[in-house]
Length: 174
Image (tube, rainbow, N blue to C red):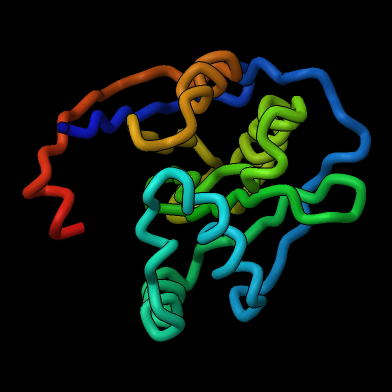
């Protein structure tokens, strides 16, 4: 069955429609050497077939080395890891949210909206690359991701700008 990949963007901080604040939820930046950079996305993606679930330690090291500007943020709820938001500044004042999600045991606890709010705010606060300011925050999601993901992105103010169908042959090479 083809997978649908949806690309979303926000082009101004004022477009953010924040979820109600949760005082016990926050972001903590961690170094790329933290084991949580590898293990947390693997746990998040396991129910959805993310590639991160099958990467070896060597493949993770190569991926981290290939993206030296990527920022690794943990979503913490009451001092426990609840999820991740990985941000990557790109030329022209763009920031991609390369990975975002909650651990399976944290899904359904009402954290997703504010977790995404925190990630988007941090993306807008990121030091821009080759620009005076961040001009665009973007990400992609797919039909393999959590069924509430796309609706949450839209509720926070992200707009769909492209939708693609990816067939099995495309998926095999990713």
